View 1 (cartoon, rainbow, N blue to C red):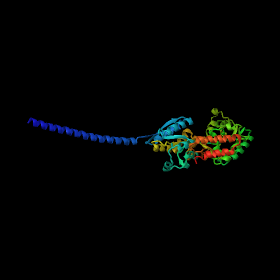
View 2 (view 1 turned 135 degrees about the vertical axis):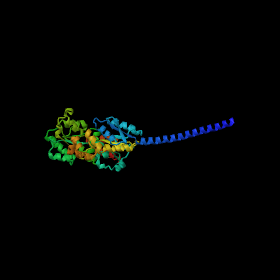
View 3 (view 1 turned 90 degrees about the vertical axis):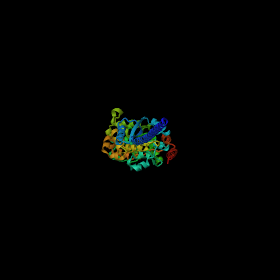
View 4 (view 1 turned 120 degrees about the vertical axis):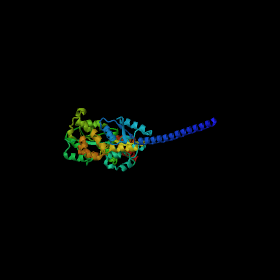
Length: 428
């Protein structure tokens, strides 16, 4: 009997143990389902978390870039832009970006690019085309600065939108130039030959050393000026001949072939030139004579388009082709290059707007005196691009050497033309 009771007790005990084990397994399964649910929920939360967009751009001594980024971050809850401040040394920044991009790294999502880098980076496959993104967003190329857009168009594909443009300008002494000639200059409806005639006449009549000063030293500035004289290298022979005529004219400095931006600026600011080709920053120097030493009254200076349009400078916005967050990168670029972002950059930092409708916005106009000049407005509408190429540095160097050699001697025009045409047709 005792053995039987012991047997029954053992059976009952085993039943309890099995039940307990079964309960543990079920509990474990339920726990597993809950854990799985939490993981999915966590994944869902993760996908709903703010996505970080890294913006690689040069530092900014105005509050504009910071303010634009903050405005974008506050405008939605899906993306957050973090600004990686690069050096303001253009060459160093180029190399730093190139090192990252060539390793196929996605550490930078949105890139600030000098206008002459776009072709190089696009040709190497480092930039994401944005044509379809623009179409989907209903963005029109004509809404943006023409030269900037062309600078970011490589082999028929658009890779960039304008960050902030710069443009070559003609500055002239409004207290010397007649109203009739001033009107012609401001309209942009004149030729380099007519500019030369004005330079000769006004320099002679006013006993001023130089009629027209510009950049003719063998460096990037010479490529820029040659681009303008030759109408984007469309009329190379005629443009180079005109440059040579200017080089040897009595109203041009004897050492014009050594002139960069600084030399041209100094001559004009000190009253030693009637006309000057330079960039918009010159106007700021004229407004601050205590710092620049300028003797010419800024009230007597007007800006106008160059005859064939001014070469565009400045910076562009592109998407890293290896970015893991291209959709967010595009959202930020749309904002920064669009009306809201460009207005902040213009009003907070006095940057030139790359979004054309803002050229009629009163707040933007009030933020920059140049924008209130009809001639400057016309210049912004007639910007031209330098050659867009994956090998731009080499092409620019070939142009500089060929042009400077011809201008120095007046010989070898045909060779210079052939060299330039060969160089600029490589990417066509």
